[in-house]
Length: 124
Image (cartoon, rainbow, N blue to C red):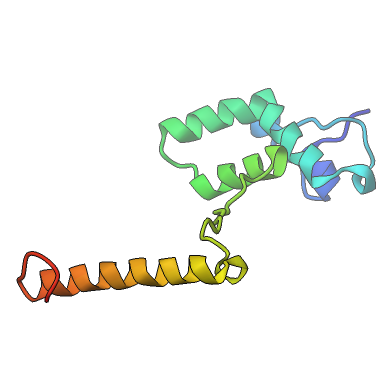
């Protein structure tokens, strides 16, 4: 015998007028029912889909409820940003490479200073 959602949760069954919307779960004991399996059973139930469509059409479904069920059923999308350091490891530079980098930075700094002071080129 399959358990209804009301039986699994230990709640009072829905009135007879709403009996068509009682969700039937696979024949598992409550202790073996995982959150993922529970969410999948809800999302795959014909009654839920009918109810979902009705609530969507009536604009009465809290979006957070449906979103949470999908997260439990299929997994929450990863929310992370990967930052990759592409700078040169300056500690591994030779003395010549460090000097060349310093000279290039000095040249760029002088060009910036010239632009800020309104000049076209490098100051003499």
